[in-house]
Image 1 (tube, one colour):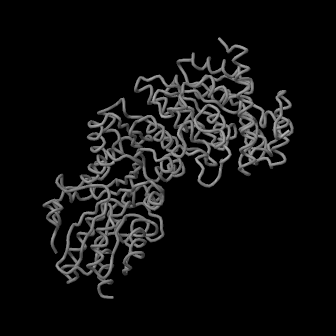
Image 2 (cartoon, helix red, strand yellow):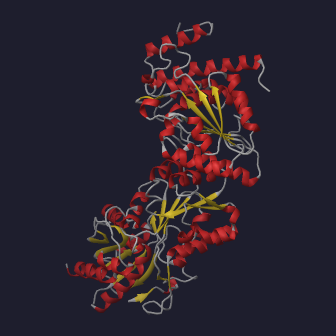
Image 3 (tube, rainbow over the protein chains, first blue to last red):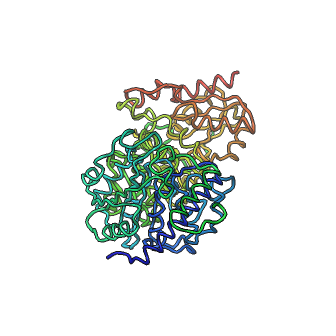
Length: 285
Length: 329
């Protein structure tokens, strides 16, 4: 089973809205990470507008699926997706990283309803996600738990402690998603600390592994559907994404991992985003 | 010197017949009792279930015991995850690793996140004995009391440890509980009052000159010191403070108002721990001369628990010397 073309088109439009909001919020914030959030816009559109069982008006609904963001530095994409999904007004996105904002530079659960954990220090999401999945299985409840991690984050030893534990527990309701964009702050992942063969590593830890194009929304949704169907193991989706996706001039450039666009760059990025997708540009054009 | 009758202390205080038990036994008993009362309680352990006494809970509630393996960082994250799913997790290992190894995980996923996790550090202090310095955690109180949202409790004996675990289970929010390996005198009884944040006055002379503020199992040494000081004509007031954070400020001020100087007692580095917490508070509210009984900027070493307590000058002799010097100043 897969999504219809019409649904895919709807989700692609959502991804584009999310990308626009990311660029606008980073320009306003004057600090933050650009490449990762842009690369993840398709996956977040798929989660918030198709995959997750959730209710933006009741973020604490106990039956909701849990989306754990382990690599907290890409949180602009989550804020943008949450805002467009109706958790809070889209204009609040422009308060990112500002004094008094609920939208902290790295996400804090207690500040903004709808965030499941507090994250930023890398490597900590999978442990929490695995325990939630274990607890739901103990209670016989049906929530699914998804954990998004970065690929550079796989350098952290704690990730592998959690991978070993989750593999031991054979958690069917746990799906990890690794944003395989091949960049981290100091350069390409394979130069900083080689990760390959990532698939074989997770398989060796008793996970079912799916590799997919993370910028292909229909393919990503199909991978999550496959994960739902796997019962005897936790599933790891290695989602190959293009860092900076949507803004051709920064795609694949690790220098954009940890810096925001200036106002001028932001205008140019938005123009590129919109012209690429044939949208009518507005004030930035 | 008058023992505080309201404290309902053991009638074998100062007798060689006093019962001895390690405070970790209190963890084991308390976890089982709390687990009976509340099915949300789960206990996690990092391959040390026998020596932490987590095994006692495991025997009673096998489905609610979770083996984390030798992976304390993951165990802290698991704790936060269980709390997020509505469980009340106790995460147990040696204090050198929990919080020693997993401090940042505790900081981010438990303290900042206000996760309802009870961090249990066993084998704290030099009284671990033969294992040596690597396993004798002396910095945990300092580490944990610095964390916002984190409470810190160092029970004085096995009975109080049992009560502290039950109280921690009923308290919503992160707590650090500190336990020891070696048997120490059980000076409290089932009737002795315990509540989080409350100090317990153990004794008071007719005319106290020196206040002995003590946490953990060395409070019995403080009491022993008070007896010797009384014999030498130095009046004392002994305040046992199992809760290091939040401090019982009212009790400290009331005691400080009666004395000329303070001796603090803990099985921890003298820098940064309980004595420092008292010094910080008194400096702002009622400055008094103070001596901090504690390990003086050193690591421990192998040896018998009693030998080490003596070597690092944490025993009744050292406490009474310090108090005597302050009284004669």
